[in-house]
Image 1 (cartoon, rainbow, N blue to C red):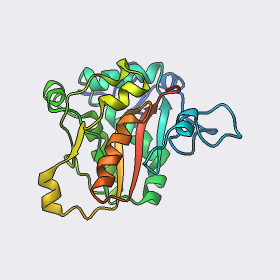
Image 2 (image 1 turned 180 degrees about the vertical axis):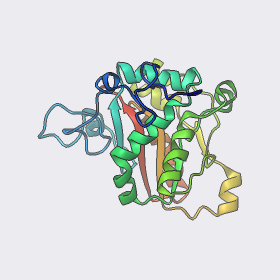
Image 3 (image 1 turned 135 degrees about the vertical axis):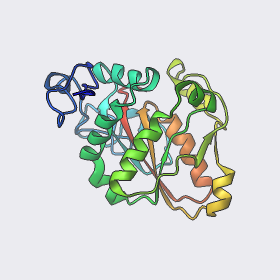
Length: 233
């Protein structure tokens, strides 16, 4: 009664405590279905194609990844509220849907650990939290997979990726991430399979940059899960 469940899309009180989203708002979300890229999960228009234009032209070093929704419309605003307006409660719905859609796939991948894509300490100080970390902890808790929230560090304050084109994004993220030396030394990093978690996948530059750091330190397979993916580059 005091803290009713509110829809993460429109903000109104949900129909019941067991329902995390309004029926009307649920219809506004564009769930990614086949045909989609077998590498990054991005929607594709031609059923005979296996990969999106992006993955045909670039070699991504992660193994595979999935996203739930197309990044536009209602979910775009919802995630903006989650990231920038302290709507951390939206994560309850996001995590539920990620597990519903891809829980079985994550179990099949059998990652040793889950690692959220880090944000720079200045952004963490400003927001008070890393949106990817909340998602990773929720998934890890439900599937009983360890979460290493600080395995990767973002040591370089980069420009917002949404302001840049594809090539600029890659350059922007060059040497932006590093392995946390404290965790590396303590664990001896005997980790072979990692699941990266983030909120949005656009060109894959961020996931690729994190993947390359992990591969450099002995990880053999990297997968990713995100809430949304962009249609274009």
